[in-house]
Length: 387
Ligand SMILES: C=CC1=C(C)c2cc3[nH]c(cc4nc(cc5[nH]c(cc1n2)c(C)c5CCC(=O)O)C(CCC(=O)O)=C4C)c(C)c3C=C
Ligand SMILES: [Fe+2]
Ligand SMILES: [Fe+2]
Image 1 (tube, rainbow, N blue to C red):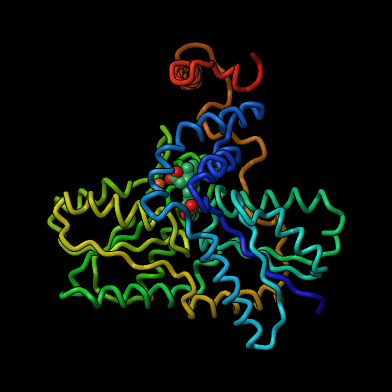
Image 2 (cartoon, rainbow, N blue to C red; image 1 turned 180 degrees about the vertical axis):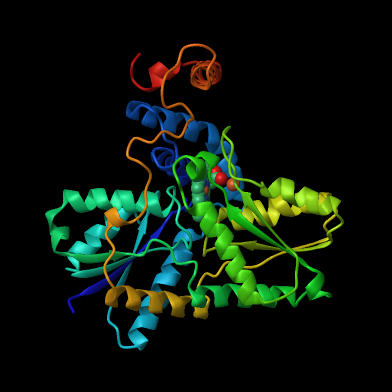
């Protein structure tokens, strides 16, 4: 066996407040996050949306100490995985490739090349697959692979999702059981699974398996946990005006409060590290909302981070991937090449859905342009260098 590497993929997060705006710009420049009918619109729109969202995002990051802990935790996971493999007699270098912030995927590939890695396992730190997360990183990797002939030599395999693995399920069940047992009446606690949402069109039109995988993952965790508690699954972190998959976490919490639920345990399930959505959105915003709705005892299960059972399973997954058949970028699911996130496919005259969508889009662009002009004294054409 040649030199072995493991590439951990993750989203990345701003490490300090100054990073928030460029981080958001990178995120919204990704066509897997905002898909537009014209490529040329991507960057101006990314600039616009990131500018409009920076203040709100900065306020959120300020509430958790001024930055995301994602890099630190992912580095700890990488070290723990490398040590675990080494203790079992396997020499492998673990690399981190973030999609929207440092260390970027491009930097990881440079290191992999410099170290002359010959065999590589590509392991996204997302248990479930989504076009917007693992799919986006795979698409970028495929492009980088094609651009550099060095990578023709690298034998690689991709792990698309891994939420069914018993080691992961055991680690999740252990964490939940531990938190349940802190309540006075553990069996009476309502378990609330909160997953990061995606726009409904990803699932309904692009065939993103994300929602199905989240639902199946929830069932598998509950089966492993083997407790009698009632449960709910809902989706958090909606952004923008389009419809996202339902139920929404904020609505589900209010409904449970109205039903008289007093003890609630939140389980974040689409991510394996603490991040802004757990530390700020769940621990601060949703807690406040739940308490207002009458839920007196609101607790959360910590993210897996470097839980030893989880790290052991990442190591086992790596070794199985090295021994098993290799899976290429083109083998892992992705949307149709020219798929559009909005409902129209074919133009028809009259007040059709397509016409309404276009009216809405043009009105929105006009409105935003006006807003920018009012705030800054300069119009958008000035900013993109056209005036
Ligand atoms: C599996 C997890 C995630 C999915 C699916 C996902 C889709 C998705 N996200 C946005 C927009 C934003 N995401 C942001 C931060 C963020 N997203 C995830 C995970 C998933 N996103 C994480 C873990 C984080 C936090 C990283 C950190 O800094 O700790 C943000 C920025 C933060 C904010 O302003 O709230 C945005 C914006 C979309 C549009 C989307 C699906 C299309
Ligand atoms: Fe996100
Ligand atoms: Fe959020």
